[in-house]
Length: 245
Image: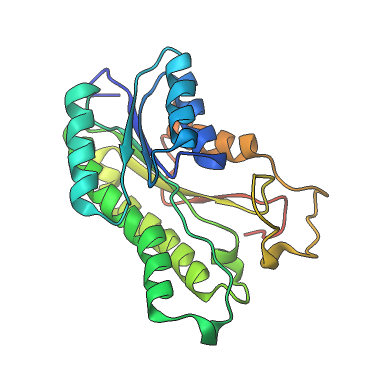
């Protein structure tokens, strides 16, 4: 990594499940963390504690990823306390199921603004430092329904498909600056949830089981690591074979 010896990662939606696992894994790999979560409750604090338990520093930013001023202020504060952000993982998401004709504009805007708008806001916040350093990694967490489509998820599918488009656009624009931009697209992952999402009910996974959180995390670690320096604009599918492409 040129420009700095400091390793600082920003992970959104990092209070639980995949987001927490990614934050902790990056701490294991030597990164200090800016943990972004909409709520600063016990779950967010636990993520910070796990990172600090590994001997790394962590800052908790309670912010909605749609709030550009709050994200910019958090990135500025992290730069002062930890150093410039060199890795961004856009994980924050809202996943809802509703018949298309029952989706109102407020619901549509919230889902699209959190998933796609949040990735836009956070990417804009960290890219200037990445360009200055001549090195950076952005990993966007997408989802298999953004590739296959799904009933009762028009807003989620649209937002996740948009994330894949943003991934390719930024990969083109910043490749010459030493910055790679990729996506990880999980299928049905065994996480803490209220119910199995409708698009996955009754769907056979070719490998015969749901995915594990650590398998998604491993994909992120690969894309952030030195071995993926020649990989950009790609979508790494972690879905057990539900979607092959």
